[in-house]
Length: 502
Ligand SMILES: [Zn+2]
Image 1: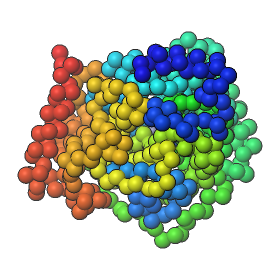
Image 2: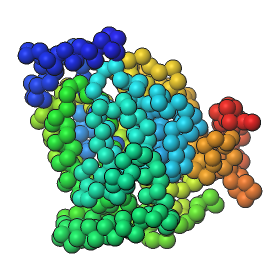
Image 3: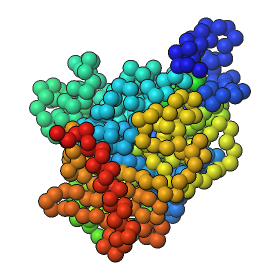
Image 4: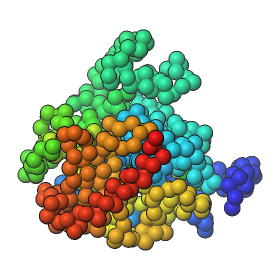
């Protein structure tokens, strides 16, 4: 069906007394025969590493409700993000492009390549009404670029306890300028003249909220830098919003948890304490910047407690998806934008390192009516989401996407597929790549290139099957494996740089 006629049809149906499309959820769509009739719900948990989930082999039972969700879903065991922090990771989900193509590389990065059409909401425009929400300001900057294709856009502070100051009326007409001013001021101590007032209001409201919630959040409320929130409010807000959608809808919902600061509720503050689990100690990496000097084992424990706390809260969303009938009528993608690490001198994810905890992310896809778990072990990437979504919604697969259809959802696994990741936050988006970390994962191996001249220029090669902790660098020993991978990685980067060479 052609895009316009479908939208027109939906409008007509909404006026017809017998039309089911706009009725309350419970009555809806159960009999839809076409995949075009299903909702697409994309749930992103920020900074959510596969390394901390029992379903992927972690010894702690961090997220039992996610586990239950996954038991009726397709479980992707080797899914990776193409980026190691929010901007490149989220941009790859939204565009189906690798970071060297979308060029959203830095903390303040935006999608450069034809951003008005090369994103999920334009590519899937034909099938559904669209809804987007993210608590993460950096992801929100990317969603903001797709505003013209988003029907319902919930601002990043939508379910927070206070409105972020960049949503003030002063900045009504220029969101990006507002973000930049806000972020520059707040994070880097800039000199925006409104800053003292903003800070005053923020501190005042925040301390009132902290006092109000100190029983539930003894270590402080969760916050997104731009606002404080409770896990409960975010889940309530999401349930309320999903309860009102027009079906079919494409919804992108990007939650801040378990992103730091890890803020478990009182109930989970002692969980996993003294359970005998210890982090494997690894040597500090030469490219590590070691900006966080706290104890990695303590931080990892706190991350796990926060995962458990978020899991308990988000279980209400999973229940709602079941009881409302939405799960029956939807493809639900549960995933992340990047991982989190507690090793080699780094804590968190704002790092130049590329190792598995940073790029290996969960992906569970619940398909309409699915009753059993399906396990996929082929390597997949978050650039695969966009083409897969296009396929599922009956839209043409964008010819600019660099991903493949996910196995189990129209694609077939390819054991020899090349999967890439790139961190180039120190590189200009408009210049060839000269400062970066890039990795190519293929078969059992991962080759990583650290390129920070003049001091750091090195290659590493790990056998992920035999050495999943990535401790034994084989680069100088296994030239027969390393050489072709090195050529492929460098050629790929060189090709991607073509448009940026003068
Ligand atoms: Zn993120």
